[in-house]
Length: 297
Image (cartoon, rainbow, N blue to C red):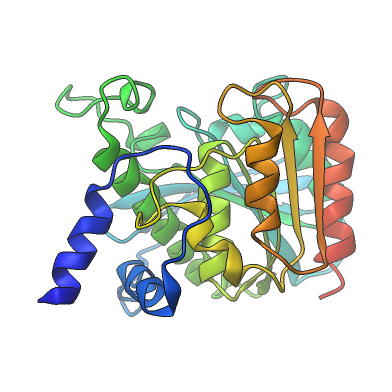
């Protein structure tokens, strides 16, 4: 009963930018348990469409997530031989899996995909909860962009938590494929996707290297989605963090504090002159990061 009450309190904490918490091993185990799911549940994978592009083949598919159907894209390089290492791509709030395959947009989607494919990586992305195909069309639930405005922070945390679990379910699917090396997985997330990146990298041993751009920190020290609760579990994995010195979500000092909480000696911190958008000039840096820290695994 005590554990249940504590777990409930984790879900109800409001969102804010915070300093490094000290939840201890016992607190972390409660959080880790909250992310557990039934991995024996059938994935029920259905292939929607397969398309050929110049440098990769792309499959659109659906699988059963922790509570609902999840749409995904998997792109496989046309050159080289599998099984291919894979990079998970996680968009920011209001984004979608579609944006990663469109050019000249906020996440620099297609440019990033093509850079990773040229390095010999498959890429995999899903629609986050309440995003893309999963946006509510009945008007019963709010749209992602309105969550902060309406102060629905419980909904934000639940959305992020389930998205993390659905990416884990996606990795379960990738493990069934002969052309993917799911145990050599990287993850790259932006903004809200940056929060997901911290959590996934800390929780899932299949992830070997990570990069995040302009990440947003959610929740106080007891929150299920606070990045600080996962950084101590990342320290043995190479981690790249890119932030804008003019970003309205944090100061460079606060961002560096989060980065420093990872520890380890395989990490790299970059500050660019700009706000809440990664410049396209950093795409080669991101692709090189995974080539140097993931492909060799």
